[in-house]
Amino acid sequence: MNKETLDILMYKYRIPYYVAHKHIIPYTHLPQSKELLRDIRNYTQDIKLIEDIYFTQYNEFVLLTDLLQFHGYNFNINYISNSLGVLMNRHVKLKHKDMIDLNNYMVTINHPSRRRRTINFIWGLMTPEERNRFINDYLLDNMTV
Image 1 (cartoon, helix red, strand yellow):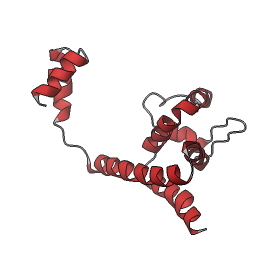
Image 2 (tube, rainbow, N blue to C red; image 1 turned 180 degrees about the vertical axis):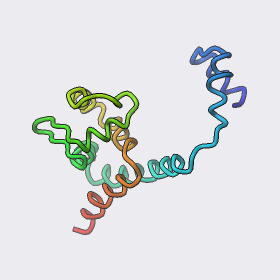
Image 3 (cartoon, rainbow, N blue to C red; image 1 turned 45 degrees about the horizontal axis):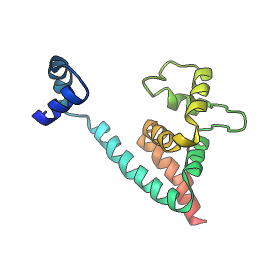
Image 4 (cartoon, one colour; image 1 turned 90 degrees about the horizontal axis):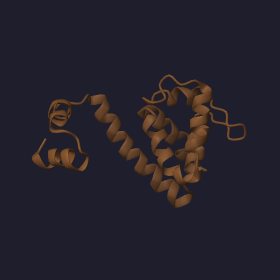
């Protein structure tokens, strides 16, 4: 970690030098797994593809609706399916939440001002295989019609 980054941590975010030096810097030099790096590349490439297609032909609401329907979410009764529950349990804060808590969380993040954030949240929790299946089911099938 260079001096500029350390200065930002210490002065902008008010992180003590000891914490930055002993608890943050060691993790910046660890090699990342190939699976994680593949997931990061896949996320950025696929979200750009999705946004290019959806935001030119449709809008954020249609993309969010398709993502939630892909995981079995029912808008009429605010029902979280097992598929969406498993997806949301991948998040650190939602790891051990029950369906009622997850449903309450979905109601709070499903606000129009948070659509883009919710799209990124759901897309980030999906595996590369799930993302490919979504692209095949929702984009490629619609393009051939």
